[in-house]
Length: 184
Image (cartoon, rainbow, N blue to C red; front, side, top):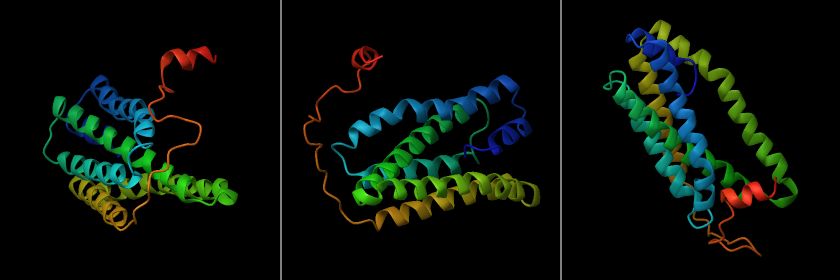
């Protein structure tokens, strides 16, 4: 739920603009900060595990909106939701890249990104429709249901062995600030 619904929901619950900004930003901050660490963990752990965990976190956090009034409880929900998003999204992109034939990898990743762009274009309209014609409760149930659908699809994925990168050590501290700034 990284679209226009949280600000509308929070404003209807009586949150002020600062609270809304902090709660919205928390999701993106968590998702952004965790992605490099999830990426590094994916060198050791199958993508499927992160995708299952991410979809569960996202599904349950969507349901939690029904019970968590502003401010602190929703802030915690957004942290959990950001973690779930980082887990699922990073692992899904990695899976697509890893299972795509090398000659079609760019095309596969492009189609995957296109699907996300389409969902980002259609999702807000569908969500606003649900809010205006039904309720936030139905929206949260729909978001949770879609996350559980992602979980079911993910569970049906086959096993894929982890193949360490050649010429690189998994224990290599490739994501350290020193090395990052050394190349700049």
